[in-house]
Length: 632
Image 1 (cartoon, one colour):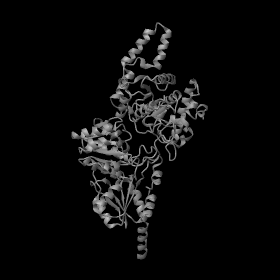
Image 2: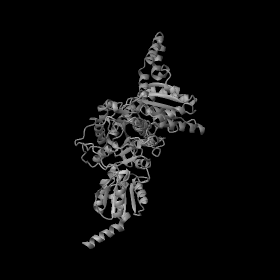
Image 3: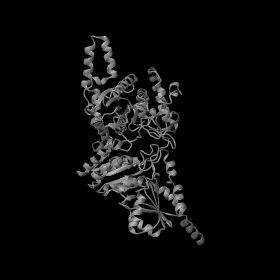
Image 4: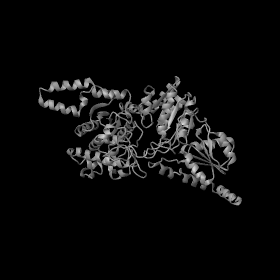
């Protein structure tokens, strides 16, 4: 390892370097990030873009006493490397390794756990006002991207912070990207601010006035780089009560460090909340990522010298791709269909839909609450909205789901990607709770396809309903079931028996069908593919409870309040006392790691399901085996 980076174990070591050494450190750090991510996979473009900004923040501010709060947190690899975790980067996003996002239990430098967007300003304001209440002069810095600034929560925090009296700095990291390209009026405003005629004219007038005095002219040129805010007009952020500074080059340490030092002095003098606008480039320093920051947003392992390559063997079709194809086919069949995404065009499989139906595609920015109510408004006027949203992100629009969609019984389809365990992104992105939080809402229905074919069919079933329906499906591919090309639906609210056995009936929800079938072969158990968590197929449940001695429910979602709970409630209403074993995700946050390993750890692979059933119903199985032996 190069000498400068090897000498830095903590930011205190960084602050002992001279200013002249920092550009070389930035080059080393960027190379380390690229090399590290190429081996482990992870977020790349965003981290290459924050190298200089991270160095400057730790160099100027007294971290961890001064608090840095990173919005989303997928750009914090340089921060992790400089704060004592350099030697653990090879474990990034792996089971037992360090997280790809800030975590308070991982480092004192991770002051606030993140992974969802637009929370940084609220959290940093809370920290700044806590410091004031405690008589401390520590400062709080929120680092937020222009994509995250499209969410309402960021503006709620700005509105509060502008009248609060805390030592708060908001750094807007403006890279003209979130994950998908940014959208909306705020993004256009930032672009106009950078290229506006007023700014250019004011800059040029200043130069003309000072040309007669060369020393002053040179001073003006330096000021242009160090304090461009002097000639920028009053901005939206000043109207919120912030002192706006910028925009400045986020890759120029000679601009960043003196500007941050000046801002630090303003905070020391209690000059009110400060707002620094820095302009960075996603993928900075790695030409392939600069050219295609979306492709390099979250790559797997790759060779940096070659870049991303197509796998030798074509990968299986993913559930996301099944949804994207269905969306295009259904849109061609029904002109009322409109597709909505909260800034996740690529992740939700809507790239082709946008190309083919641009006037029926709506990216609303990172604004999940707005996405849900916007869909409700469209549905009120006879449109058929399909909201493509990750399970974990729908949690952010829950109030709107209840009051604006379900209460009015509007026909909105929610395509819930990333249901269940998601792997390397960990607990913040896991879709563990959707069955529990959806099935308690009147008028809502929840479909759980077992494979790729059922995903397409149940999306059609959902679309045909005249009330809200969610279709939940996991990240990645399923068993490789052949996907039909037609738009035929499956029966609403009905499951099916997939294997007939004796004594024990396993009720599988979603992709848990296949490990349940494997376990049932060794147990001679019946297996039902339930397909719907709500409405539950109570006729099928009644039949299975009548003909079996025990029921087992299996779901890739939280046990508490989930599909198994729905089964227990239905049996209670039927007056049946059949014993029930509920298998699913335990009452804890599931760590990041390989999905198959995680499912095995929580007993949701075939072996785990079999072991749990044998442990719970061993006497039944022994009795059945004895009866078979006697019959033989």
